[in-house]
Length: 327
View 1 (tube, helix red, strand yellow):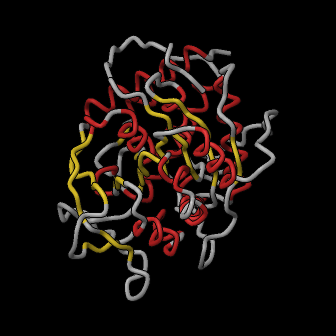
View 2 (view 1 turned 135 degrees about the vertical axis):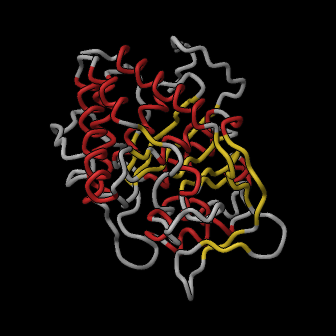
């Protein structure tokens, strides 16, 4: 899908044009990240693939199709269903956080558009065989990504087509301000995360340390209420669900948009500051915890983020896609 011709009211010059595959588990922040990607001229979204995480992979796939249908865009990226189960362990879900349907209990009607007949891993590899400089944006558990890495281990051309993998996940406690030691995406498939971290493919990690600093507020819900369309109503509904959940259960007056932050970095390197670290996922004593170990850095880790600049861009792009797809 090419959206290079899109323009917005807020001029934001980005020199790099990114080809991305978004691998997601289609909860509320995934939905916002997908809309952000589709609304941005700097992103060529080659495909959206799904994995079990916030919801099971079947619900995740249906959610992506529903989101795409709401945009009213003429050209849409292919969608393919991925892994139903983690490489090891049991399926973890987060329906209490994201709603029974994963989309804030919006219960949208069944989508008319369909997913691809082949699976996510095959679709990703097919794209890698014909494209270059592809960014894999991993905003769910890393099961699909680990399987792709295993399958292309001896396929140099496909492997070299991956520019980088940008991962939303983990906790490093860089500032000492987080109580959590583990994070959902990594913990949902610890062995898959371990394989991806150990891969020689270029990687960037955007952890909970960074994404927890970026949130929407009540004023943003009010902002989107001024639009009159199905997509705008959907955005208001999912934001309201997340806001109320956080207020009641986390005592926070805000809405985290973890996955959209990662899309922002795929779009514009200047939004984040990075440092090379050598990290591994503990698969033994503290399973799912990310540890720094001695040795040459194996990935770039986000240690700072342009929150204000990002939020201006994010809100503007959602305004744009709502305007474009009014119905």
